[in-house]
Length: 116
Image (cartoon, rainbow, N blue to C red; front, side, top):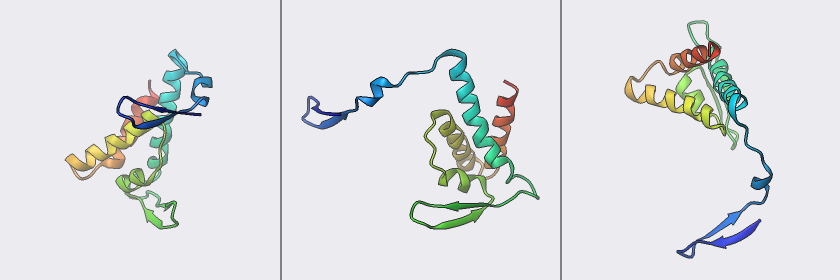
């Protein structure tokens, strides 16, 4: 790790570990992206419909939330994978535009990716 300054004098840190990581390419990258999106879809799939199960969410500070609302579940999740974050954005845009169907669009997208 080394400290470097940009042209405006603002410090930023260069992490040496980032250079050692390898980037996946081609078919492996595609499979990884599909797997991440399907994982998000599978989490929400069990909360869909009249017999959908509730999820118990615990925040980092210990607050407990019990819900089966897709928008709430997606908003509380800490996601680091970029394609999985797109599923969260898909759910948020559905909630903003329509106000309902957040779980359905994520499950639909996951079902389409299963066929890919």
